[in-house]
Image (cartoon, rainbow, N blue to C red; front, side, top):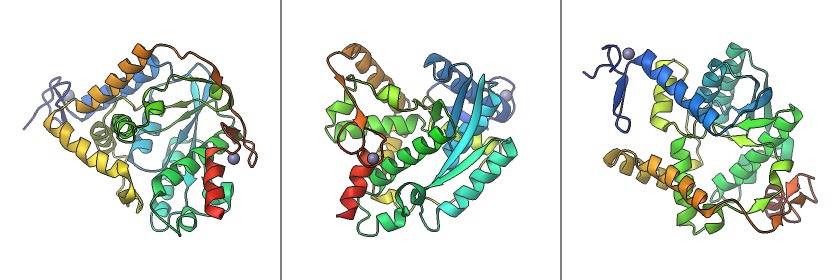
Amino acid sequence: MAVCDLCGERAVLRDPVNKVALCGSHFSAWYEDCVADTIRRYRMIPPKARVAVGLSGGKDSTVLLSVLTKLGLDAELVAITVDEGIANYREDTIAAAVSLSQRLGIEHRIISFSDICGKPLDEILAVSSKQACSICGTLRRRALHTAAREMDATRIATGHCMDDEAQSVLMNYLRGDITRVAENYRTNAAELFIPRIKPLCRCTERATVAYGKVNRLLVPLPECPYTKYALRAKVRTELGVLEYKYPGTMYNIVTGQERLLAKLGPAIGEVVVMGVCERCSQPARNRLCAACTLLERQER
Ligand SMILES: [Zn+2]
Ligand SMILES: [Zn+2]
């Protein structure tokens, strides 16, 4: 039986990268410190911020909201749940999100795809499920931003953890999307969008789930029925195998990406000016924003 390095109690997690074994309470403190450090290091939350937490009701966002309430931040927290309209999946996660916000005493709002584009995801995808995750992602970002604006939020926090970050870096390479790999162009997007932060980006999914279990935050929930169509699902599986065999792989991917951007230096050249979408008046680089481009394609 593995025991805690600090107190000799039974260990709940042995971290192969940092080579520590910790009991439930020492692990929880370690995890919370990691989140607090990340927020500080990347200056994610300025004083008096109003932070809208994207609360899907799933594992990562549940842990995110719970940890943020414990850190004693000089910030106000509110929660937003996006109801994509996915039958037999969303009902339970929404119930989990509602009960968590109530328990923590946090103002909570639910916004649905029907609110922003007139129909649920199931209906949008009725023709083809192939692009499910990218369509859903684009509309979800829009919904979150719309609700955050209505709630006067100054930051949007999402539960993306290190695994998600590492997957995204690899996916940009797999798609040859060098614009995203070398994201150092200048835009005025920061003035138009509410800045997004990812306080769990230095925590692994494994540690995040362990935190949720140790602190009894998680209830068993169904998986989204559409994820199996996504490239991300394959990358996730393969990366999981690599991380198991070579602990630290994901950390190397995300910090390597950071070093690459640092080497490229600050963005130079002309500012890519964003205007306003013809259909919805949200910020857009082209005639239509990403969400409206998608919806227009669906209508054809
Ligand atoms: Zn301990
Ligand atoms: Zn638009």
